[in-house]
Amino acid sequence: MTGYNNEGTIQKLHWAVQRVRLSPGEKYLAATIKTKDREEPRCVIVRLGDGRSPPLMLDDVFSFEWASDQVLFYTTLEGLRCSRVFRLDLTSGGARISSVMEETRPDVFVEVSQSRDRRVLTINCNSRSSSEVLLVDTATPTLEPVLVQPRLQNLLYHVEHWRGRLIILTNTAPGQEYQVVQAPLSEPSLASWVPLFTPGLGTAVKDMEVVGDHCVVIARVPAGELVLIVVPLARPKEAYTVQLPSWACAIETKRPGLADENNMFQFLISSPVHPPVPCHLHPQDGLLLSGTGDGASPEKQGNYFTTRLEACSQDHTAVPVTVLHAAPVEHLKAAPLLVHVYGAYGRDLSMEFSPEKRLLLEYGWALAYCHVRGGGEGGLSWHRQARVEGKQRGVEDLLACLALLFSSGVSSPSLAALTSCSAGAVAVGALCNTQPHLMQAVTLQSPFLDVLGTMEDPALPLTVEEREEWGDLAANPQHRLSIASYCPLHNITPQRYPSMLLTAYRGDARVPLAGVLKYWERLKEAAHTHSTSHPAAECEPKRHLVLNVQPGADHLGPDDLEQTLDEVALQLAFLYTELGLDPPLAPHRRRRRRSASN
Image 1 (tube, rainbow, N blue to C red):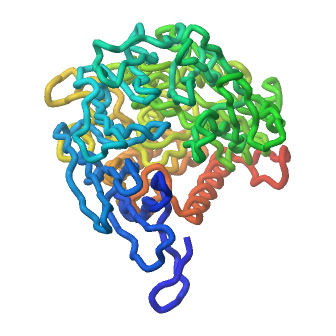
Image 2: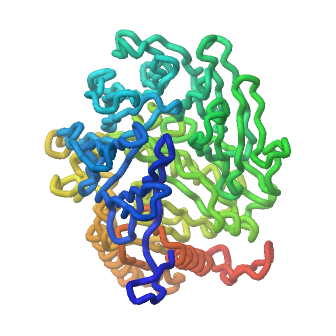
Image 3: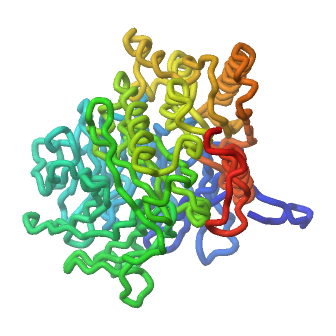
């Protein structure tokens, strides 16, 4: 971002706009901006059409929504906690701020959102295993919020509004999976919930939107593909499925703008190698169109293959693997392979468009995405199977995925690299300790590698909140033993590790730099011990352990384009060097500098 300082000199401004909201009558605009040096964003509120009034600034705002043209609800971020809700009243030309609520539980995160029809604001108070939602009627935004359902352990729910009723996405289906229920606005508690749509076995509900008189459910079917399930709210038994293009790996919904767009579902579909394609769905007739305006179907996108496989894990669980490639599978034996994995917090592995991934495909690489347990691809149970004492299952799944890829003729260990970020580094780091020969190189961004040390320190920002994911060491000695069995840092041993590129950020509060530094130092020490105690190690190609420490408080990557490009360039150069590949001159024209046996 470029701007001018007080002296009129051009300077670079390291900030980015995160969220923008217009008030219902378009009298005010609110936007949050975030700098690279701090986690907490700032909200700027501007009165439109009035160039004389200075903007109003609110510090540390995380989420915000307009209840009316002059009343804004917002939450504040303190450290990494979001627990307080405020009301900003701009009537009568003033700016009055009042407290609405404060959540006292340290494991609960609070945010505000707005129903699609703008009739209701929701205050969502969620932990990793339970929910509590309060409603604000936008017609009377100064009244006290109404509680939908008091918190119950292991009950998750999210609320939308339709014609005086609540449409609720909740995990009350068999196996504690998500289904859609409804309840009257006047009696919103659990006792009044009536099922509208329950997915079939193996279908994982990811999200829902109320569009006109229909509920559009975003789901992932057992084969791993994304689909839309349209449920007519007045006739739920007439639900039908809309197939998306087979290459679609990610979907992003868009907020409706104009009033006449409320009966149309707008969204973007993409994959790591397909740029986002805008699509429109008309739920009343199931018509799916691309956003080009010419009625074209979004089905055809590029000359790439999307192959979906299933690996058999140690306990015989089928683990989905998505492979993206430009050449047929039978021609991939000598192709370099970049393997992606996450497997934590019930979140799907990110498969949004990434220009550098498309570039790799054009230069003959194959890309594999391993949907291991701990993530959300297979629904809530997929996550539960690899929480706390089940974390080792995610590592076993990753091992099974690599074995399947190599046995299917996709690349080989000497041409394979693994990549991940944040908590996804746990599975990668654990596998490096037990099976380092299965990969040539690893790149990790903001890597969480000291699980044991982090969960032992309750003073760290997220330790208490993360106990439902990793375990409570203070209350359960078995949790300590479980973490100690796989923690990447505490299981480093003298052996030949793959080359590694670790990218960390000095101000990252989520993954403190100290843990990354400790891992890097211990890894170097182990590599040195191995090389000095094994004479044959001197004949082995040198493995490089690179630590890239960047300024700022970024966690999932910088907002600054220049820094992003620098990091991508470093990663690509590292991969080409460590896999022994010549820098590409043209697609499909590459040769090895070292033999595959290295």
